[in-house]
Figure 1 (tube, rainbow, N blue to C red):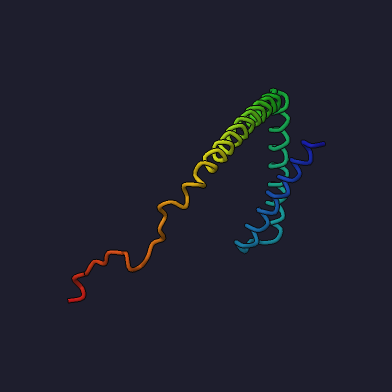
Figure 2: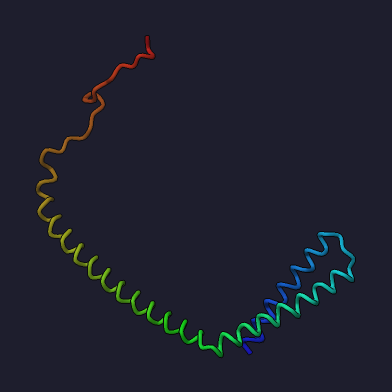
Length: 124
């Protein structure tokens, strides 16, 4: 049922494309409908046969296996990233405790009067 549904969807898209192209080129309605019917049949058959061959040759199972292995590797990477993030948070918590006392020492906000002004040649 899936094969037939996919084939019908692609066939309908092909037929609608043929209808729009025919109407934009100012062709007669009979010719537009004939081309749309032919494109519906041909594209539907091609998609149906392609899906059937794809199933029989076993490519679907290969893709399914690849998707599962990718999902497993993504899960392993996510776990590694989560471990790394938690380790970084622990390190930051330790360093923040040590730097809180140092944060008030030596910090002076930037003042406009303390900036060095440079004269430009355009003012002459």
